[in-house]
Structure formats: structure tokens, C-alpha cells
Length: 296
Image (cartoon, rainbow, N blue to C red; front, side, top):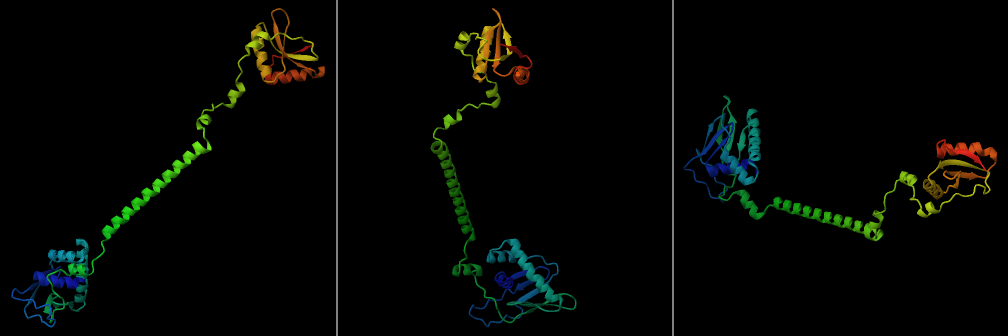
């Protein structure tokens, strides 16, 4: 419904209305509203009076009436009314009348003041029941608030369902990986972590039997020379070192030089011309310059 219609309805219901920056309209106390079906009823003379007031402020009762009828926020209702009156003032400023159907019209005189001239007939239907409420009975408006709640509820429910499906999928993946693809995860996880350096430097425990049974071997078993890299009086230490090197695929011999000294050496069946080259290579990579050549 237009602001103009609401303005007129409020005026006849309240018998007074003020328009900011214009003035106040008052309905005569002895005025009786015509019947609703009397469409040709005229507005009596002196039924409406107007007092010009350029400093008139907003009519709070008019704004509240607009809020009730339009269901708008108060600030929006006040803005609609202000826009309507600004348009009316523009007409007045260019010398045109500001018409209010059902009441009359305002014009600006030479002194810049507003004068009111009543209209002839009533164009606005005046009813005790507010128009907006009557329209609601005929064509009820859809409550978007309830629909919003339903939509929000549906969205929340959808998110919960999606989260549940994703969670079940993750659980299924974990179960498949650990119990179907890899039925014994504990065995896999219990494999000790062994570093390369550890493997390289780990020395197998000495073979007790080897320590007790390792004896010096004959020195003339077909080799042409030998590279001696250890000489010690500790037979157990010599046997231990021999066991370690043998485990690492080295060909090692152990022999006695006298009743208390033991030597460890690597025998070679190569020409004697290669002795220096072999000794230098072994000293460089294994024996740190301590090895020496001994012929048969």
C-alpha cells in the first residue's frame, strides 16, 4: 500500500496528522465519516484544517501506523515517509500543488508559506480493520523466517550426514589397510630399525668354539708370500680377530713365530713382484700402515 493511502487512513482514524517540515492537519470534531458504500460522498467545508509549520517534526504515531500496516522496520518506514514528503516539497518548490488524494492539496503562496485546499471526495476506504491485516486473511504472506529455519535445519542435517559418511569411509580404509591388506601389522612394526653404519661396524660375537680350537696353521700351504697385519702374545685376541675377518670373507691365517707370539696374515699366490702393490693397498684400506710382507 502506498504511503499516501496510509497517511490518509491514519488521518481519518486519528483525526490528526503532522507532516515534518510542512505542518499539521486536523479533522473537525463534529465530522462524521460517510458510510463505506457511499462512494460519492463529498468532504464537507471546514472539515479539515491545516496549520503551516516549517519546523514541524516527525509524527511518531504516523510512523508507527506505517510500521503496523507494512510490517517494516521503523527506520525503513520513516525513510519511506520522508521520501514521499521530499517529492511533495519538490512539487511545491517549482510552483506545482502537492496533492493528497482523499484530503486535498497544498500549494506554496508568494510568501513561501503553504496553504491547504480541501478535496471533493474520499478516495481512501476507511475501515476499522487495518488493511494489511485484511490482506493477510485473503492472501497470507509466506513466512520466510520459518522457511529459513527449515533450510538451516536441512543444511545442518545434510552436513552431519556427509561428515558421518566420510568418517565411516576413513574407518573402513584403516580397517582394510591394517587387517586385510596387512593382517599382521604388529610383526611389521616390530622390525628393528638398523642403520647402515651399525651393519657396517657391528662385529659378530666371537665363536667360543673357534677361540678354543683356533690353532696356528702351517705356513707352507702353497702361497708365495703373506701380508702380516697383527702380531700379539694374546692367543685369544688373535683368534677373535681371525674369527671376525673370516666371517667377513677374508682369507686369514694364524701362526706362531715363537712360543709366545702369534701372527695374523693374508696369504697370496701371486708373483713376488706384486708384493709391494698388495702391501700398500692393504695398508691404505685396512691396516693403517702396520702391515708388512713376509715370504714363505
